[in-house]
Image (tube, rainbow, N blue to C red; front, top):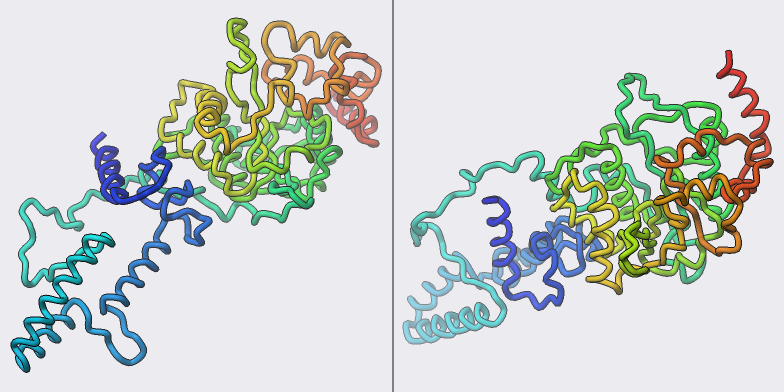
Amino acid sequence: MVHKISIEKMSQDRHAASASNSKVFGLLNGHGFGLFPTGRGNLASGGNGNGSRYDLEEDDALAYRFGSKRAGKSRVLTGGAGLSRNIRSLVTRSPSRGSLLVAIIIGIAFLLGRYTGLSVQTHPSIYPPPPFLIPPSQFDPLTPEQRLALSPISTNRSLYPTPLTPSNAGHVVPNVIHYVYGLKDTGRTDGKGDEFPYYAYLAIRSALVNIKPDKAYFHYHNIPTGVWWDELLPELTLIRHETVLSHIMGKELKHFAHKSDVIRLEALLVSGGIYLDIDTFVTRPFEPLMYHPTTLGMEASPDSRRTEFEPEGLCNGVIIAQNGSEFLKRWRTMYETFDEHNWAGHSVVMPWQLARRYPDEVQVLSTRAFFWPLWSGNEIEKVHELDEYDFAASGQFGYHAWESLAMKYLGDLSPDKIRTVNSSFNKMVRPYIGSNDDAIFRKWKGGKTR
């Protein structure tokens, strides 16, 4: 608590003269973390994201103005020790002229300090330090968690690719897709993960067919295995996270799902594009959604007392964003309040709160865009057992299949069953069966029965 108060005080002091309209997240902006346009260290300013380049350049400019830098071969002695020597010289030669010059310089310094916020620096050899001063050498060093909290975007930004130029005129979001998978600890030492399931293969195939991305990035720690992974591998650009992110804003990330939540934000902040959960089936091109810097879809609340515009939140199973999205920066910053016991607090609830506070920074789609039918009640059973819902006629962009609740259906899929059983789900995924899927499935099934 002491640390937070001190940081907050520093931020307030630093920005006392700021004319910024946005006071939200001033705590971070005050230190130039490069998270929002109101801060000094915004990445768009050309700095390195932590404000140091901007501040150093500003300090250099002031130093040249007041005489602590060389200009060519001569030294401009208008401040500091040089100023003192000039004054002594003038006073010795002409006391009256020197006194007048001293008065003029003091007046100019006063006006500069009053109207530009500059301060006259006292020389330590002349003025003793004030009472209670604590020298920086006695400051407690930052803990690893606190250092991590100061990270502008990622603990390892080199992992994420340089943003591609958007494919179409008018688009601001590059036509790339991101998946995050295999973060769970398997206990293995060979870097290999679980067998890649057929439904996940079909989901990625649906994105490749409908979005036709310039790149399909696959972020992972443990690489998947199995025949469906081998079939899909040529279409993917692999990005291995050697060390899985363990903290965000000083908060520990324990569950692999929460780690994935952060990685997807960081990947989009750096590279831009479309993030998709591994169980999201794309049913039509995303082209109409690529003109806005950030797009999210509502996840309906199972609480019947809520209205359509009182959803559970904005689900992060699908995120469409320009690199450097202001909304994603705000979202990531709110992880300062992360609580692992509030399962969907920062993945679903928080973005909806931010959207209502900053509606111009995010394009919000209704529950029908990606997350319908819902996971509650018997909706999953209807989708997989009946043929009542028509995904094509709905016009929705995709369907989040609610993997953890629908596994008894998803895990039992086969090319033949998808073709012969007329459920709403099977009719939706039929176009994404690959030309070799039957032969691969027979080989895979034969290997399982041996």
